[in-house]
Image (cartoon, rainbow, N blue to C red; front, side, top):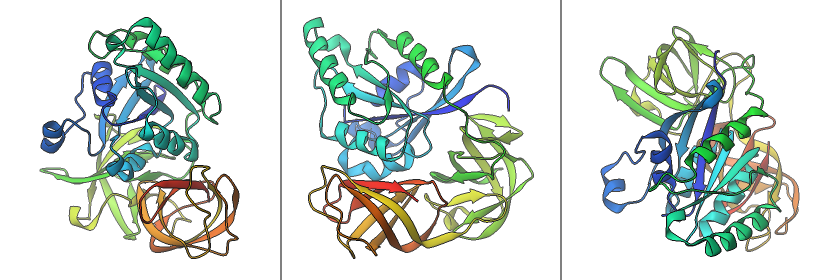
Length: 353
């Protein structure tokens, strides 16, 4: 499959400089929508290729930091290999920093780099205080974090250090299995003249080639792959750890939405019942009892459901449980997921199928 390829995802509080940092690193403005430009915030997912030293090909998923768009952040955080936790040096750790950090941990992201942005706005003494605060907070995390890197998207300070840290971060990561069944959780669906319906996502496993058939779930339809792009370039095939776009024959744009999955091979099915190991965050406001209504985020899907067959789980504790979903989604053993309360909507836990 050529050069090693990985997916990098941003995380962090609103207006801490995630999109500006991605633009400084890649030259790409990932705010695609007029409303994003007008309001000066990221609402949906943005994507940019990032070639790194040593022939490493990375793609950056830029996620929104506003608390009202956490479900979009979750769709982007799925499938990332390395997280960039963006913390503005002039503000430090904020509420969405904590929620995004919890999501990164719950999804099983293995490596991360804390980036102290807006370094040009603070003096060395203040920067040292923020650096200490961040290092102390992350010392309790289950993610393996690099030491904090101070950077400025305005002056370019720290960007080369960040690129070198990214190379270090992916060097000891194993690429996702190419010999597994192909699986692409879909995060965007659109139509292009001459290409037809196009779906995009971060490939979780396996490979697919132009001309192959894939099955779309939960639609349960076999369609043909007309053409492929990987990290924004035409490709004959796509493998794991790649930002992948598939042009499909046999399905209309209106028949698909974020949360669908493209797969190959036997054994895949959409299910409305999940048996899981479930943990409740210490920050959860109350125990999780049977019949509690939840928002379940797995892959790029968000599905409402209820907890069944569970003893009440206290904040900070874990137990086995069954989730009964109101709509089917695609899952298999080992998948990580996040749960959010029904109302008010906050991240309260997650676990493993």
